Length: 436
Ligand code: ADP
Ligand code: ASP
Ligand code: MG
Image (tube, rainbow, N blue to C red; front, side, top):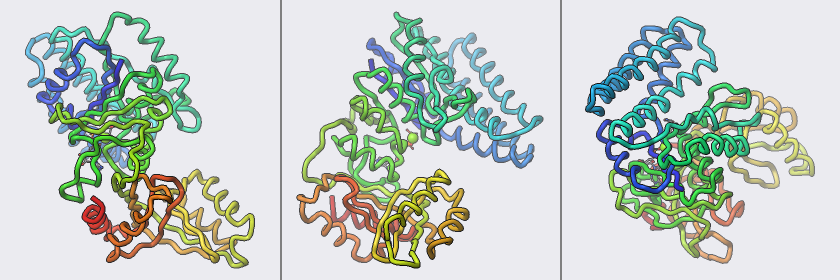
């Protein structure tokens, strides 16, 4: 069995859905994970923001615009009256539900339900389309098996048991369709796996069922060696290790959700990244095999805040780092990068929700300086110490760029550098010019 995930652009129109149907209707058994049609989740976020502010005109305008888009898709997708009718009813029921929040209280619970509508609608429409064309597909409701625990981590035992239970009712079925991104939390409430989370869904399902392969179908021919949104002439990486792909995803390669590689790695299920617009292109295979002696790729993570913490007393005396880390832990704020010196320690975070409280606590025993709007540039490859000269090439490439922090040695696959957001593009371009 294989898991095939299609992102928003890949199912972004009636025509695209037809192309996806051609790709999934072969005879081998598969689970197809779909994101919402492109733009949908952004619109739902916009609607939720209006609803929070009780701006019902604003909300209705976006709701109506989005609904018209889905009605157009229904008109273009189906041929038979019966399915046109089913499609219209489906769209109407989902949008009636969203509209009901213009007359009701709106809290984070309702927001999660609104955000779930895109994947629910897109998968149901796609499944109708398969049925109209005579395919014997079954819709698996993600809300019946995808679940997180009290720490907001996937509840892997629950996911496996429930997925197997539901699928065992359809032993003769070869084609299952399910929603990416959406889940229930430990309290059974509708929730999601964060933006871009459909990749994570695919990886969690693939790992739970120990499938032969997970395929991530998107709008580009695989993982590229630099961010194609900022650098020209990037090229697709044919083979990459789980560890390298995980570093790239975590440090900003938008093509994969930050945590989506780990479940596949733990279950040792290879992941292929493939292009819906060019299905024959080789794409990228992510597996346990590690290419030796090369720099593989560069990525950048935005929205970073750097905090420089200097101790008043003899520095880095034992217990100092523990005190620092405990503060971040108590506010559930992960640290991305860390560097130390005799006089202090610098750390970076990507979540400023509790920044003020963290700074107040740190100031009780140290002086702090904060730099906002920073970017982590991450160079990934076979960077073991014995592979001499790579650090030199990286710094040579960045000789014109002010570098605020450097982290090397945390893993054998990563050198991270902190630069100001305004220097990001130049840094990425300079690295590509020098390294590839
Ligand atoms: P999907 O909707 O299929 O999940 P995404 O938009 O989330 O697609 O991810 C694909 C996009 O990721 C590409 O169009 C590309 O602009 C961007 N991207 C960023 N970094 C990389 C990279 N290293 N390799 C390939 N694509 C990348
Ligand atoms: N539809 C969701 C989003 O836009 C999930 C995904 O695309 O992976 O974030
Ligand atoms: Mg994505």
